[in-house]
Image (tube, rainbow, N blue to C red):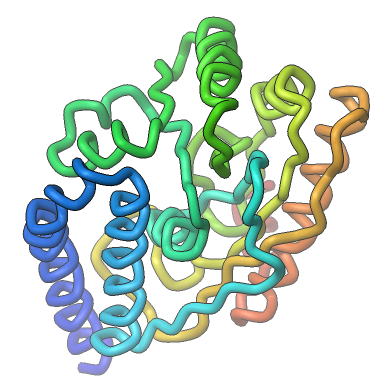
Amino acid sequence: MRNALQWLRSLLFIAQMYLVMPIMGFALLPLALINRNSAYWSIRLYCNWVRWSARWLVGLRSEIRGEVPQDACIIAAKHQSFFDILLLASVVPRIRFVMKSELRWAPIINMYAYWTRAIPVNRGKRGAAIKQMVAAVRAGTDMPSQLIIFPQGTRTAIGAKKPYKIGTGVLYKETGQKVVPAATNVGAFWPRHGILRKPGLAVLEFLDPIEPGLPIEEFMAKMEEAIETASDRLAIEAGIDLEKIRSATGA
């Protein structure tokens, strides 16, 4: 009975989340068209609405830890579900996403992606995608921003092991920007698939920045260790038995 009630509350939460998106998006669009800073403000407003309504409707609290980057940098973030994207966008001041190219056709999202200079890339064409990202980042150096990239390239279930792609290392080398790793445990409460949202405390944690100048191989190893170690710690904090999950999946 309790699970059924939580499922219904989750359904209500998801329904209102996607209903509010176009309402708020269209209502705030004139401001975004006039001033790019208003586009960032509008995105943060919506994402904080989702955070607040998640707490109220399904008991899912959220917390940001560490120092939120304010200057130009690359944020290399663990990606477990849509919620970590929302947490990032709720606090990062001038957010800029590397996103899959299909989202260019998604209403509302595509308009705000355009105004925040998101970088669409075609997954499956790694070499071309990396060149595209580097060129786009270089072209945007006149406006400092925080570029979000998911080093594993896709959502990864909590406790699962997936390789880190070299694209983040190439961006690190070619742009000369510092990289701020970010860890999370949101997958414990908001899974990649399904409707059920679980109560608890979802955390996004910004870690110590990695300054430019390291060889790519050393940078990649340092970044992966930082993200995976912190994400495992947050998962255990959320009550996840990582050993059990990895034993069952052979990870």
